Each structure stands twice: as structure tokens, then as C-alpha cells.
Amino acid sequence: MTRWFMLGFCAWVSSVQFYCASAEQELDPKTIAVWVNQLGAEDYNQRFRAEQGLLAAGESALQALEQAQKDPDPHVRATAKELLHILHLRLPFEKLESLLRQAKSMEAQIVATCGDANTSARYRGRMDGSRYLLEQEDCQRKVVVDGAFLWEDLDWGLKQKFVGKYPLKETLQEPHRFEFAPLLERVQTLRRLIEFKQVGEGRLDDAEAYVLEGACNGADKRQGRITMWLLVGWTNTVEKVRVRIPKDGLGLLVEALDKQNHVEMSLKASKIKLDAKFDEGLFVYQPPVGAEVDAGDVRERTPCSKE
Image (cartoon, helix red, strand yellow):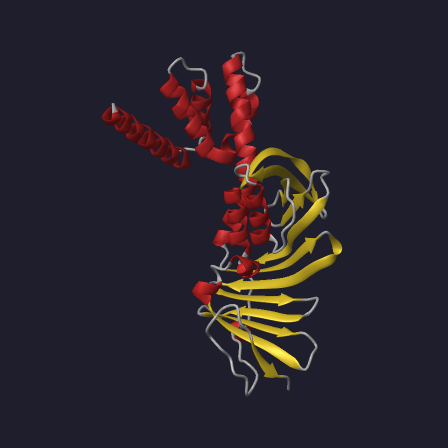
């Protein structure tokens, strides 16, 4: 029985891979029309392969599936409605991820808020390949990732200025360091940890946007706090998450909501510029003269005298 199960499973995987590849190569209306017609086929395998082909076709299948909701066959109508719902939940993220993944460099305004607008942190983030610069606008704080180390320069306005030099590999594994992660990693984390079930339309600033709502995967509320810690940097009681993504794909607003649908925390990325040109010296950090910088424990900062 195990042997037959494994053979069936392998055949199913092969059929999915075949039809996904076919959808990428043959996105003409005739192929999509054939798959839509097969949604009403008597054979289960044929219906299943048609569903996988339409999902793989993505945006190219939307119009045909919209029309299929008027099909005389109730099964075709129901399946088309379900496939449209899946695609509407998936495509906004895929479009944003695709834009971010293809960009060689990027600049964005990032605002993380907890409770109300008075408790927020505003950043200007710039990325060029594996190099990253994060400048916090509401205090004198700068983080530079030069590809090997993460440098943190923090001025609290006291008699001492703090400089930290952290090994990059170990540092980025620390959950509380996720605020330094590029926007693409934040989006991927969001998709991995949140199960989105509702989608609608709204606005983000002056642009039309998709509005998606969901909750953390699983029933563990602790996972919800960890999720928002990773995304925003603060933790509170989180019931659900609401996301807005502009229809042009460039932008993101993540809001953590409580039981009364009040916003507990949020993360907003806007004014995104892809393939921006930067000066090479922007991602190079030199500690102040005379500073003793410890490259050891990532949780330590080395104080040095202000000039």
C-alpha cells in the first residue's frame, strides 16, 4: 500500500510541475480556455490538472475565471470563484516580491509605529546588493551593512557615543535585529507566518490598493507576538493582521489589530525607488578616531568618547 501511495504521490507532483511549466510557456487564451472548460470534466485528475494550470497562469487567467463564474455548470462556477479568491490573495504579494527581487538597488521610507503615531520610528533605508544603510530620522542612529559586518552608530546626546561592530551572519539571526532586514525579507516573512483569508480594495496614501486580512498560522497567540516582533520590532496582543499593497506593487502597510480592530502596531514602506544610484562611499563606515570597537558579542556596544 505504501508503494502505491508513493507512486501516486510522485505522479501527482510530476503532473503539477508539468502543468505549471506549461502555463508559463503557453499563456495564450486558447490554453486557458481549455483549462476553464476542464473544470467541469467528470474525471477528477483532469479537473485537478486544470485547476493547477489556471493557478500557475496567475494574472493571465483572471479574466477567463471571471467569465467562468457565469458558466451554466454550478461546479465550474464554484471552482472559478474559489480559484479567483486564491489568486487575489496571492498575486499582490507576488507582484511586490517580483519587483523587489529584480531590483539591484532600492531606497525606501520606513515607519514603524506602536500604539499611536507618537510612538514611532522613522527610517530611510537604502540597499545595494548585499550592502545596506538604515538611518533613523527621529534620532541620531545609523546602521551600515557593508557585506561582512553590521555597524551601529548611536548618539544618545550624552557624553558618550556608542559604536557597535557585529558579525553579520550571527547578527541577522537575532530576532530583535530584524528591523535591519531589507523589505523583501519582511514581505517573505509576512507570507510565511500569516494566513490570509480575506481580500478587498481600498487606498494607501493616494493610490488604489489591495487590502488583505489574516491571522497567524496556528492557534498559538505567542506566534502572533513573535510575528509582529519580526516585522515591526514591538510586541503586543495581536488578533489579526491587515495589509495594504498598492495595485502598482510599490508600497506596503502592515497593521496588527486587537479584538476591537484597533491598530496596535504598524509598519509602512513608501516612497520606494528601484534601481537607485548611490555613491560607493555610502555603505562604508569608519568608526571615530580612537574608538575601541569590539567585534565579539552581538549584544554589546563599545562606548567611545565623542569628538
